[in-house]
Image (cartoon, rainbow, N blue to C red; front, side, top):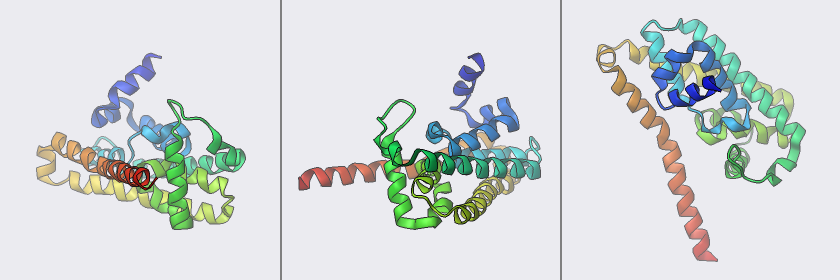
Length: 212
């Protein structure tokens, strides 16, 4: 229990979290965020960029970091797909709880219907969709081979693009001198899609209520 409590205390400080848990905590978070229903609240893009920044500082080997996180990302989506395929439409009837938000699942369903198989790739860069898109693909009985190809490409592209952005920017002198501020900026930027989505959802809900 102390370990779990320490994890959540460090969750607000990504640099501190990564330094505390190392590669192990990175693997767990990436896997949980893409493969477990409870992972929707975990940091994704900002975590990977911060890991890349730390790799530039010599904390990690960038090759080992990318290989392990790519495997975790692909495995996470794989588990999500199989879970969705097994549970089927019953999941949409599940009540909202502390660790499960049905609204996120419905948004992921809309996202999947809009982009089709490409949603598996695009969803990697969208917080709520990252967790639920593979589950929705499983529920929708998406062709397994097609899913695997999208999953592998998406996992590789997501991890590499995020960590390498952090890694190469981390070697810039200005970034080295203002490391803490850069991480704060990364976190703010990664939260922007969530904020925009929230206000968009509020606007749509208001328009729907006015029509009624």
